[in-house]
Image (cartoon, rainbow, N blue to C red; front, side):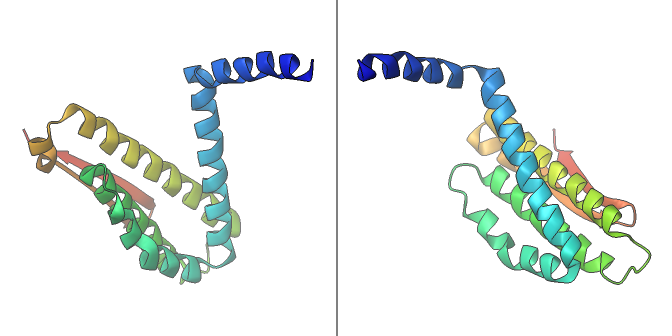
Length: 150
């Protein structure tokens, strides 16, 4: 009897995981949670966090699936690290501002990687050099740049 009760429950879970809205909500929740954790670590010590971002950034290049996504991830992580190293000397910035700016930076990271993945999907393998992605640390905060060569 216990087996027959579990089978409909498993079928219901499998059906739920096929729903794109449920999967999207799950991905967004996990991504925002990771962004909040990273922003919290940056708030605790921007110098250490920025240095760690720069040290671990080459791991972003280890992606075998899409060269464009790997480069976008690398550029974004280096940009976030550089930003945190530059704000360390700014005593006027509150912890709340550091947290907010890092949340924005990690959301830009997600948008950049997703944009690279989407554009890589529509480009042919020989066309990947037509897209240039980057991230710059400005006084107002991090900035994602994308260039498309026609």
